[in-house]
Amino acid sequence: MFAAGVTVTLLGLCAIAVGTVGLGAADQLASVGSFALTGVGTLVTVASLVQAVRQQRQRPVVVEPAEPPRPAPPSGVAPLAADLARLRDVTNVDHERLFGVDETIDRLGESLRNPGGASIISIFGGAGVGKTALAYELIRRHAEEAGFLRVASVSAKFSHIDRVGHLERDAERENVDWHALLVELAQQLAPGSDFNDTLIEQQLPQAMPAEPCLIVVDNLETREAEVAVRYLAGSGILDPHKVVITTREAVAGTGVGRLRELTWDGPDHAAASAYARYLVADDSLLDPRKSDLDDVVRAAERTPLLIQIIINQARVERLPIRDVIGRLRDVSGNLGRAVWTYCYVNSLNVLEQKLRDPGLPEASAREQAADTVANLMAVFCFRPAGSSIASEDFFELSQIGDREAFLRARAMACRLALVKSLRNNERFTVHSLLREFYCAQRGPCGSAS
Image (cartoon, rainbow, N blue to C red; front, side, top):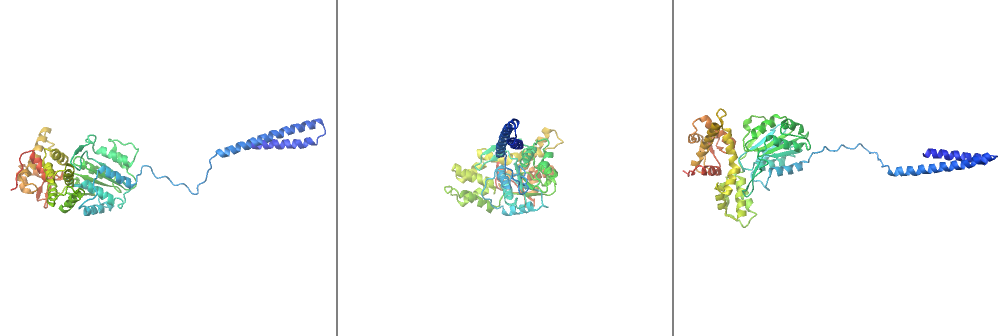
């Protein structure tokens, strides 16, 4: 438009020049037309200039980059710090200090840092001994140094006992199985992707990130531990990734490779006593004597959860420590029943299930297995609390006629952290509270002999 206007204007000017030197009326008429042509051309030129200015103002300014733009980081990759924060929420760790664990954590840290070492680390032990706190502290201290850039974590726990001894059950999670836990892990690693229980064993390997990732499965307890370990070892997700699990069932018998299982029975007596003193230090009104704290450690048998419950209930209920210990030992009361349910009932039920003979009808298999469990555990009702029994005496007093059946039942009870072996597996014992609870429901406990 601008070029056309300029052209018309020039033509008009040329015609004016010719018209001014013309001789007749025709030339004068041409001159008038030339003035008109020049005016039209000028108007067209001005209009085109105005339009061009307006378009220039509306057009965005484009600046050529000095160097090609860097690609954006992949979506869904959370920093390690965020993963560790989630781990603390998942595991429900409630501690400021741990006692008597530094050497153990350092040894496990070596396995975590060693690329050629164990790919699966299992922390095995009974209820309340501090397996979860140990695993959390291991990862908090060593995951970054070991080169892990991601931590994905789930918990199989569907019941929880708080620091005062109140039992809470998560009805929505009570029937959660291993496949549901895998879906939860996959959704953390690949947010927004579609996963389902049916295909998750095939889908999880594709969800694993390229960078080294640490998978944490807390509180496998007694139902899914062997299934979980066999899947994790054979799924192809290990290397450079690793797995840490906490469980109440020993998994060393699965025979999978590159598995390290730590049996954790809680801190030693000195560390347990230090933990008890640490807990009472915040309440000057409690002011227990040394003998009171010794009673706490003795009644709890060094179990951190039980030490915490005894001292915190004494603080909250304003009871003498000896009265709280009495409550703890009474399986018919609220505190004793909560601890019995949380610590032992599920493991005893699983022991009975695992001892069923598949060759018998279901009802007969259930009855026979229940009798075997009763015979095995009742032996300790006639022994002093905290005492141990020799292997041969254990067999004879159990009245389980078949030695192989006895050995199988005893080994399974040890694998479920119900029975503890001592002195090179020559002597055996149970937690004094388990003895108290179990025997109280079967008749009077035996006295010291």
